[in-house]
Length: 287
Picture 1 (cartoon, rainbow, N blue to C red):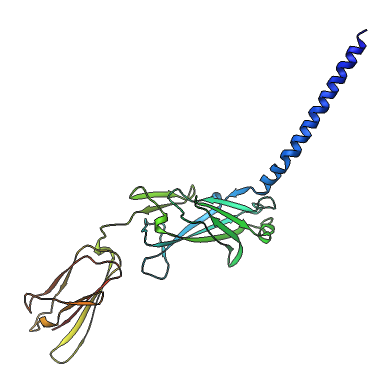
Picture 2 (picture 1 turned 120 degrees about the horizontal axis):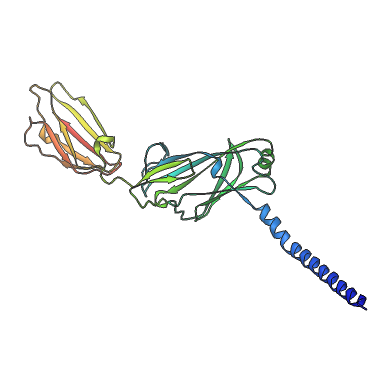
């Protein structure tokens, strides 16, 4: 009497299992491509592979980059251009056909204004391209040859990019900026009161003998940074020589002006106003 009931129940259980299997198969079919796509586009973090980050600066009125010592505080000026070079190494099997890109995010102090791209190099060979977005994310995409080489070899690579000083924003006068867990550089805001004695000035005296009684010389003063007021003191050797007061002129950015001295025989003492960087003051004199 109970057999039909058991048979009906078994049939319903069988039908339920079939539907569960169908649903699971549909779910796998629906999401499996997304998982495969995600795997193919996974980004490998570059942070742990960076060996060094070096700096260069092109000052406002210069045309060449000069290296900066990253072991010393780096002064960030909005009018300057900075070049950063990132050197790294990728151990064998870091990359594969499902992982062709690396990702590095710049510290929060870097406020990138516009997206930029450039080459990735291994030695002198271009092996891919990088893109920096306005969030400071650097995406490195490698070509097939390098990915194949990385299956068995460690890859040494580098990339460099330029940015304006205005794209580095510091909230404190001096900040220690972490590029990785082990690479930290100290960045500072511009020094508004530079000390002229710390190498911000170039001073040179040059001249010639005109005749047996007269010599003429020029004091050249060049400021590498903005300065405080400067006192220029020039003293003649002991003897009968005296300054020719009418010969004194000051030339600042090629605009001469007459300089008056209180006496021909007193030491030449001139209080120069603050100089701007790359400006020259020329003091032609006769005695």
